[in-house]
Length: 226
Image (cartoon, rainbow, N blue to C red; front, side, top):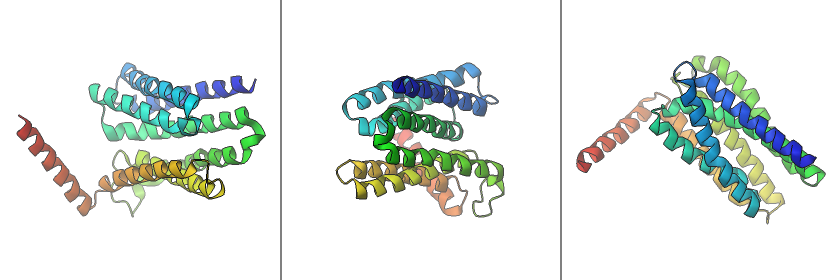
């Protein structure tokens, strides 16, 4: 019965993820393209997640993210989605998906891992509470001079993986042989990626110079490749 509840919550999480993606992109993209992209993400992530869950269950979440992001990236490029628009919708959808996932883990594995699963469950809950504040006021933030598309997604991803880093690193001190230190390394890498996205979209002079440098380098690469 616990396993049935676990997979039922996962299915509900996938549905919520797809719905949030559709709601975010419906004004700019064709609905069929939106669901195709969401399906590509899920079909890319689920097989990798099942493989990891079978052989290295401690890293099943990272397996899902890596498979889903790779498939979603190629799907987005093929359908000409804008990266930062995707970030806004997908990041929030993934937080909801993780909420159902960790709730399912709490039910499936019972009291044996109650403490650790509860800590992980608190991560998406806290991020969703903060995201509500970000959604309503981020365009008025004086410390972030740009109200560009992508801020919500980057801020959501940064907050989520920062809290995940705190939990993983804290558990690595209590459970040194559990592999949590490796997971905290993955979380740190994700934090750096989302922080870079926030900085590059900030509109600050230094960030604009850095973007101009990368764009010029990309153009030169295309010219040399001809």
